[in-house]
Length: 424
Image (tube, rainbow, N blue to C red; front, side, top):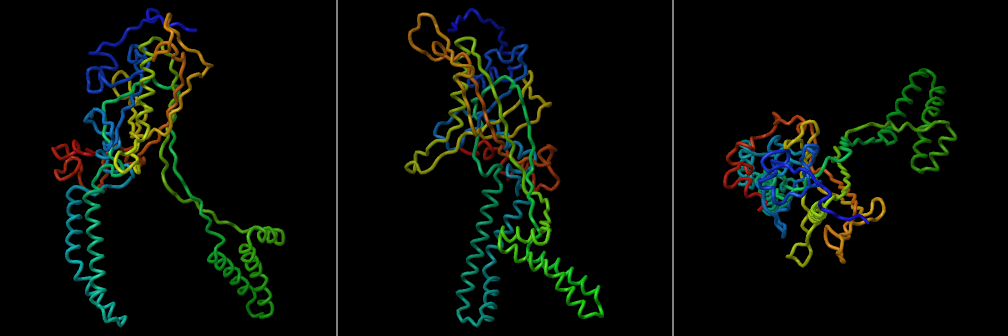
């Protein structure tokens, strides 16, 4: 069995003040950064990827907050478009819109009362007052809800999630493959076969038969029946299911044209799979590998909310992925927005089980005796943000309402009531 001898492996670790990992060393991420290989960032390992962790705001296992924004939120501040692809109502225009809705909710009752009176009069209903009261109250309630949505939902940069960046970080060597797939979904509706299509086609055929036989009633009648019969037979065949369609095709030698159309449906969220092989070369590196797996496994799991007798779950943490070179983000590789970790696959015997043994150590110990020589780790991420032209352009579109970054009334400014308190 392989034997750990800590003097066998030597390497030159980067100093804390320079090198590719200098941006992590001595920073708020330094103490909670786990990396593989242990000499990641040295001269021949300047390319690497960083996985930052965004915990849920309601977690019962809080980490140390970094103060940085998750990528999906920063993208919103840059583009004015939410993760769901919705343009947010904010800024001066948003305040005016919310105010106008509020005014409508105040004056709506009188207008609805008048409308209800006319409706009740036309129906001969004597109890017009109750109708007006009901409709007026419903209208005011609806407008009130709309105001609440504008102020408390559509002003949030990511209203389906409440995540915040913590200092827990994983730094790994660049994987062997980095596929990026961009997928758009299209529907192919069948516009032929309906009653309207059948009538339209039959009517056209009927008109041709009439025009060809003007002045000859007998021939016109025969031609009309001859031209209409396929459409009648097809309508019967379509209504009788598969057997009817087969019989119609066998009898006529034709089938109905489905008249397919291609219509855009929706974008697809991008997925990313990263594969890593760990071959720990020392006790320290073996312990680091275990810490990386433990950290990712912990944050990809949900948690049971203590209140409610286990009825609710708090969703798992989310992750930001960056590709780095020499301490800075590599602009040659496309950026990835905030992701969820859909699956973690670990194989502790990728080439048949073999473990390290420390001499004279009778029991297994973490990172020492019993530590697998090789571990395969596969991470499957799914992006949480819809990518649009605005996302790729990287600039605020001209049609975005308001200015979230500079509006003093915005929920995203960096003042005392701004992002620093979001999700807490």
